[in-house]
Amino acid sequence: MTLRRLLFLFLTLTQAVASLRAEDDQTVAARSAAFDLAGAFSANDGYKLRDGFFSVKLKKGESKIFTVNLYAGNSYWFCVATAPVVKKMEVTLFDETGKVLPIQPFSDGARAAAGITAAYSGTYYVKISVADSSNSESSTACLLYAYK
Amino acid sequence: MRHRLTPHRCLLAASILFLGVSFLKAEPAEGTNKLIVPEVAALTKSDMDQAAKSDDLTLPMPGEFFAAIGKRNRPNWTLFYRTPLTMTYGNRAQIALNLGGLIADGYIAVEAQDGRQVKNIGKDIIALAKQLGVSQNVLGRGNSITDFAENNEWNALKEELEATQNDVRAAMASMEDQDLVILVNLGGWVRGTEVVSSVVAQNYDPDDAKLLRQPAIIDYLNKQMEQLPQALQEQALIHDLKKRLLAVHDLASYPIDHTPTQAEVVTLRTAVSQIMPIITTSTK
Image 1 (cartoon, each protein chain N blue to C red):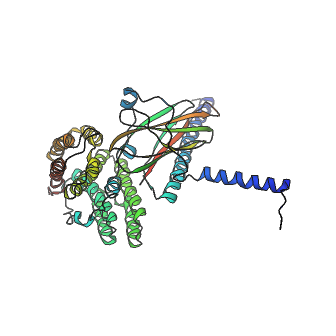
Image 2: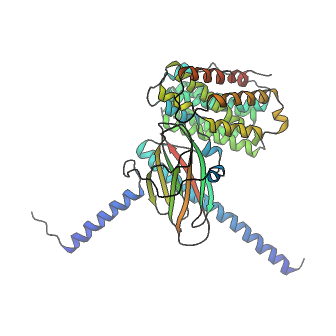
Image 3: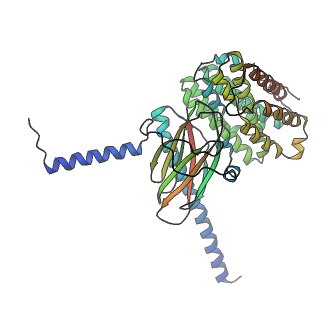
């Protein structure tokens, strides 16, 4: 193995580690911002935070749909946060037939939330979308929810 | 004293207004926004079929179920305490199932605001976790549960119980016991449904009865059971559970506009209650 090859291998490995670390940092930052947002509902309005979350990488114009199961009469806030390069994040809720549901919206750049009181017990869908971003790279978005 | 509107004062007033609006925007509070219907297309069948599912989002915790049932008529949660479990199980699958059930019991004790019961259940959770070899991860949680229970911090306890379950699941996954994680979820769901169906059956209320509609959750649990390794599926315990879960699916799959009658609720409760002895009876 020549010195040049060794150097190339070293650089490739360094890049890979840096990329992995960046991804982790992005996920941690997105999760922290999402928990902060949901924490406001918890502190102000007595919502209880789910400990779990889901993260996904999205570019401008991309979206991801999640299945959730809600109980009639409970109120929920679905909160999403991503990197600050994202200028507008959106959260939309749908019933089990795919129909768009009325929501209480919250939008603040890279953070967004949708509030709903479940009308029936069963499946609902949550769609998160990157509506606008200052670059074309993908960012990690983290979704979680709070209920009461 | 008269106040003149100088340019400086105008600027100060505008700055305060701007800061106030920014603060409101950063700190969302209920009631600050009206309901809106976003102008987006409805989901297609393909969208819904491909929607992501995960334990953390798709599977509600027992606490969510109990929060819903406690809204209209506060049940006497102490009626649903169980006698202490034997804690001597012969296989890891059964321990995982009972761990899930115990976590659901923790939520019941929190709903009853019974600190002593919460602490007892916390100790049992640690004891079972030890048998699975994941106690180190949940030991800290056990201490927190005790502290919160002593200080009557009921909301914090609900979050701590879920965090405990997540720690158990994460520890199992790291020990290549991923297969058992579904059994923790299943144990919790069965115990939660047993209690809620009992509450509704004893004190029937049509709105409460509608809470028992949960076909998608049972589908999700069934699909995860199908993915268990063959060796595990061949265990009599798992085989029996799968069969009974399918039967419960049919009993809890009401149409969206149907209100289950009291007789239907009793039938569901009976079916779910028959699952619990299979989970709790020691095979040792």
